[in-house]
Image (cartoon, rainbow, N blue to C red):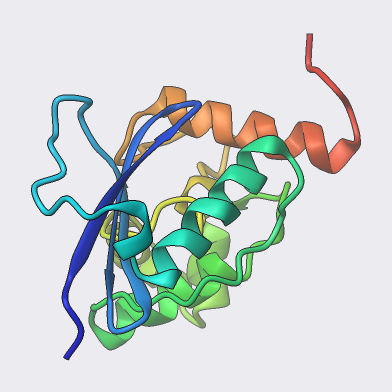
Length: 167
């Protein structure tokens, strides 16, 4: 069994804590800047998957990456896994409503359960829960704040449209 390793990455929209275990990213969450990296490892001691994740995040924020290839493994129920798989398949620069997500899961009645599973996603950006919006196109909840959700969506829309800036 591989050691569980955590690392802090400072993104343009806040500090991101990533955790790796057994060659996969198991958590990627926005954290408070006062959060310490309790298990400090020198860069050359970090697992390759952490380096790959940081590189891919840097490319994403620089606008040169639209899809992630870093291995991920998130624990959850079978239903949560189905929801996260659907999230992972939402194309860059596109959004999906909670109602449409429930329909993709095969049952429009599971909208609340799908929303709950979406909210339990612990691999931000890579499993793009930020791409889920309200049926009325509103920016409904996001575990790490609506300002970050807005930023991520604007970043992706701008790049998908080939526009250098929105303003």
